[in-house]
Image (cartoon, rainbow, N blue to C red):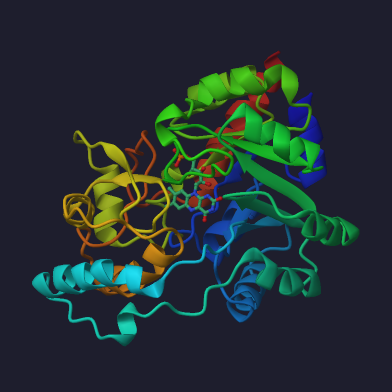
Length: 356
Ligand SMILES: Cc1cc2nc3c(=O)[nH]c(=O)nc-3n(C[C@H](O)[C@H](O)[C@H](O)COP(=O)(O)O)c2cc1C
């Protein structure tokens, strides 16, 4: 029943959401997922209003179907700029040892945008669906978005966070299990070690949460997806499975690492951004974590590593850029299309719904 309500509200055929993945998703991926009958997501966390407008135009040129625009809802903490110096020097040295010469300007903190800087362009562009992570917009922003008929989807990593979002009038909630690739969406508690598996989280949400729940984290195949729907999820949100797809902007080395059949493990780290995120371990993570130098908070560490990550990506260097990934990795070849993923999961979920 929840599935049907969700599909009607989002105007989609299949209860399958392509997870927003900043740095991996593209307008092509978003449009392909929506055109296939699922919901594509366009991540714009931390981007400037101009960059958002361009991404919206590029996506709308490829699809007339609905898609969600995904924001990072966080505040920027005050830090003493001098406290960033040891990390700045460490990144400079690690980069040089790897053959990347970074200038001073490459390690400056640029203008940082929060979701509040982004609301105006979303409203001007007539965006009707916004998902978010890392927090909950303040009351004024929720009111503004609702006045413009924007449907809101939040992210929760605990029952407490889901209840918080529900009480704030958020329309749907992504339940993000500890298996999920990329950044953790927590905002009421910092302790990642205490965060639940997707299954435990869905069980906890089942009686207390009345808004539709979207399951995210470690869903690898259609059997997993059906299990999450049986546990009360109205839809599934898949991230890592889309990383090797043809529409993904992941570098070839990242795609290969994910789709190769060999033992690999993801780790939780703050090394790249200052926020906890799950990805494959590599030389950069090891160097930061063994340095003994405190990692500045998000988004400062994210800004300090931004140019280095770009330079490493340009060299197809998987050791010095983030390789976000959930606990379950795809085994598919890098020729899989985003549409094929949506259709495979969508058909399986609809068939089981009819079967019930
Ligand atoms: C490469 C990557 C980037 C991500 N970026 C975002 C993002 O920009 N916004 C967001 O809400 N979630 C982001 N996530 C988390 C996903 O929305 C989702 O919770 C997760 O991918 C689900 O787990 P799975 O990867 O095991 O399928 C990202 C995940 C990955 C793998």
